[in-house]
Amino acid sequence: MCLGVPMQIVEIDGFTSVCEAHGVRRTVSLFMIQDDGVAVGDHVMVHVGYALRRMTEAEARSVWELLDAVGGETA
Image (cartoon, rainbow, N blue to C red):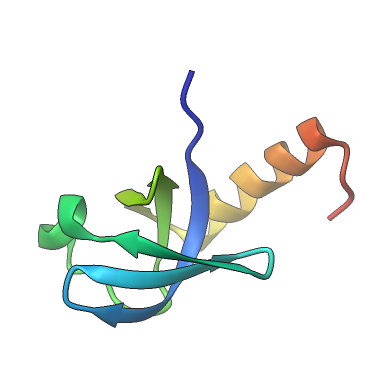
């Protein structure tokens, strides 16, 4: 089973971005969604360092609510 994590893009340099979620920043490749017109501030689903798709802020928030519930954390 694979797990994708919603993150928000905070910087873009070519096909490489810095994304953030819950205060954690990671370098993420945008290569797989290069034709989607992503921009700083967009939310993306990230798996093993690659953004798989762009998503709305509401979708990202909903996924984090589920992940927090499964992990026993409070939002």
